[in-house]
Length: 539
Image (cartoon, rainbow, N blue to C red; front, side):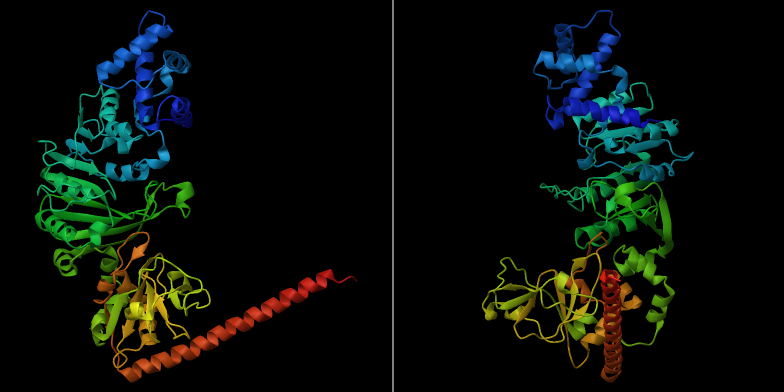
């Protein structure tokens, strides 16, 4: 187990080399330094500047590496300053800039470790450098297994081979899990955290259902499971809800393999990305029932303290026919299905109707150029409060009214953010000047003969309404709601007079609530002012 001193030494050595090599060359420079140092440790000859530099060039040629040291004197200074024992191969794989590199946290590798057992022999660790500095520990703990570790980087392959030169049970290969037939081997266990959020592959040769790298990885790795194999893979939230080819991939997985477990991971588990992620366990066989879990972090301040333990906050299961009916893997929806309040709502005799059939739903307009003196007001997410809208600080634009006629807001329009960390819903009140909503806002314009705006707000603000909305949220840290998806939510459609009764009581009680708060604030401010004034009076 490495201590802090060893870890600090690697960064100190990288820092010392920054002035002589560009950042991308730092691991190469350190690798060549160590190999040259090791050469003289086992040699009786005393190193000189000329001998050391010649040995460096020979080693670089041997490994097919470009020598980053142009000046022999500079190299010799670093060579003499370096202690051969201070750098180990695995730490060398860590990036010269840890803030910009994707590494798998220890807490997640511990979860991977739980999948090893007596029936596991052949193991694939994809893109192995992501597992450092815990890769050797993982392999040492499971020394009876045969490991096949991959990397797409030539330098990483060289360092990995040095790491495992005395490990007959480890094979290192430079290959890409995003290429069809990247290996002919089959495995009992595959562990992977593929590329997140990269652009789609430019070429489409028809080998895979999707063109996104992370989706390719799922399909490709599944092809390399043996008859009883298991894939444990971490993927971005998009796999759970996206339509098109991603939906086709979901159907392929749940139809051709056994989707065993979906586990939502805590926000911020990866330091280098804010993308919400899920861990999937997929085995050979047929999907029947799927375990669904939600993990929280063991600390509130994840950014500062990291995550040392995954805390299970919720778990349930969903059957194959329910997944088919849902059409996605939205775990908010799955948990809602087993919620007692949600079940009461679903089993009630309330008449329900799709929102798109009783209201017009559309996205606001994209605004590029603002004009503080413009004649048209623009509502943004920041203007939407819990109960109302802040009209005093609206943005403005100058535009011919006819060009924005389709976006002009009407009295009673319901507004909610299309994206954000919290959902706030407010009813628009007509102003003395025309207003539009920005593209970050969804506008719901109810058919007044069927649906009242404030009634709809009361429902959507309720716990049941929140669950209805959560089923359409796209599961990233910053939630997104498509206005097209919003049209499909079902709402309870009471008779108009019953809706009006709800609205009347809501507005009456809201007025009393706001007045009570104002009176309490006024009284508090009066007391504070009086006490402060008394402090200044001379007795």
